[in-house]
Length: 553
Image (tube, rainbow, N blue to C red; front, side, top):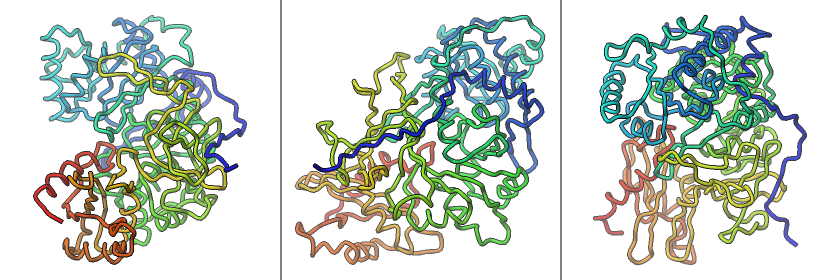
């Protein structure tokens, strides 16, 4: 009988049954003067907060929550950039028993509408950006004019909002107030809601309990070898799952961050390298775009890159070449996989992976199960494509809808169906991913995985990035459209790209006369992106359909 594609990591770990607020209280007691968070918003603007200050200010803000009627389970919208204020707000919500809902895009009418439809009773709004200040003020007043009783706390003073609602004034005023915080907050109570990136078209809201988020991140940190003395870096917005400052709550580490817009927009600069060195960063989360930046800057004299104890990357497929080079920057470079719905799922050191394939995502973290199933939900043999399913302590049970209701997220047995297509290696523990189920292109009777073509096209010396999508075809249902961007300083024509494709895919030697050869090639100036900086495939597909609709093969 063939070996089935199922693996459960049975490694023993003690679970932490605690709340986030209680964890911060613990660290504040034993290391009050240690920096919990360091934020670099510019070359000269550095701020930090100690564990002692963090708990004291979070407790003051939590008292305010209670004083204005926020009760356990109530929803609080958080529209705040990476800052000490964001962290204080997050911990305050935990202490008050509230559920913090983090926004992806602050200056978005859709996000503000969700504040109302999801049923938030309080909004903490960052007013330090002039454009955002104008947008927020106008729209908050509009919500109130329609009868929505929304309480607002503003980070920074603003003319249109009472000074009584100013964040820092509240902290001062509430410090000595005798307000009792709720007793009996359960570690299994919900505490935070993360938004998905919207890769399927519509972002979803995923709620997490204290216990789920603490223990998943404990497993991640332990697998990476992170200890209390380590200093962790991430450039991601702290309201994202990947940017959530878990090491503060779980291990009492110092967390270093900065203006995430600058690294996405400008890349890993010499100034960022100085910050990493200045703060003595030992560990971190480096998204694929920063891994590419590290690779480029490794031999640049103007940028001295520290050698890290442990780093992890995830979010996009990386080539074998980049993963191998990743080992030059860290003692323990790790590759991870996860989704907002199940948090971190796999974590493997690059050194421990079998013959690295471009698609490998490693093996499950402790207390995590993975399996590959077919369209009938049956587990398939190893090395057979199917949908990746996950079950672990962090698996959210429900989505929070835009109407404020909960809908079931897992199947009847508690499995989350990721929508990712992959397979399990015959070593019995490592998994590979080929792409999203919705990304599969069905040309005639053949199913084509975009990643198989993207990997080949990305090797062209002039191609910066390749995205392959399906476009409608009257005869074959779909055809393959290869979209690429060109490297700075390089030139590339569609004819040259097509010639390269013919050489690499050799359609004439394939049984159907096509194989993986794209029917269309399109050169983009840039690709549209999601707020997570992943390529927006849905929008790219729409643009490709429009560009190819008037073309013939």
